[in-house]
Image 1 (cartoon, one colour):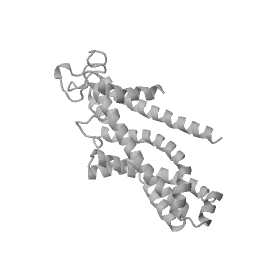
Image 2 (cartoon, helix red, strand yellow):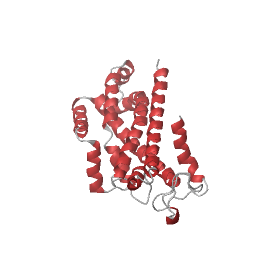
Image 3 (cartoon, rainbow, N blue to C red):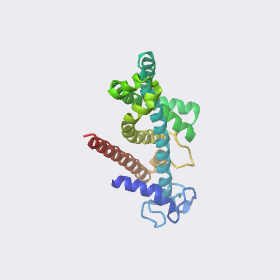
Image 4 (tube, rainbow, N blue to C red):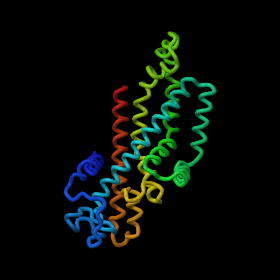
Length: 260
């Protein structure tokens, strides 16, 4: 809970503090350590830019990318899982085979190739992250649907002449949504890690937009003289991922209690 609170303050409160500025450079006040200057609570980078302001924007950007990518992957994966699990047969075989092929390729390696080829514009990055992370949703949803399609309420709807897509929309989708939400909450942390890794090697969010991975990359050359330039954004990644993991576990516990 404390982790989530810190992340919330960074994203929602810091932008309204006096002196919030991500771009203004002041070489006379560069490489300040945290708390060295009251005007720059977390110090400044090599160009004299305020670390706290840039950290706030970087966390917000990472979360926006993660939420967008997870939304795409959840929509694609849930649709594939519902279709494959309900209709079975050749449709199931083809869709799951596509998923198996994608799983055989390391996600990060695939993303590096795609981003290096197509570019790293934020919207494109969100789409690529989403389209390379749908298989987990597809497998989980398919497994649930295979079991649900044999339940009496589904069989009754089919016997009454309901179409397959009507059964999926009215009976199957509501029963898998809670599990999809739990999986999505977990995957947000995974996507934040991948996006930060891509930004660290220069294939993610591009300057001048702040990014957690990019901030670590820029700060590593000053690791000996000013380690906070690396540790502060690294700590922010830890807080974001830890807070989201806590949230996903909490959602899972509440769901298990509601079903017992």
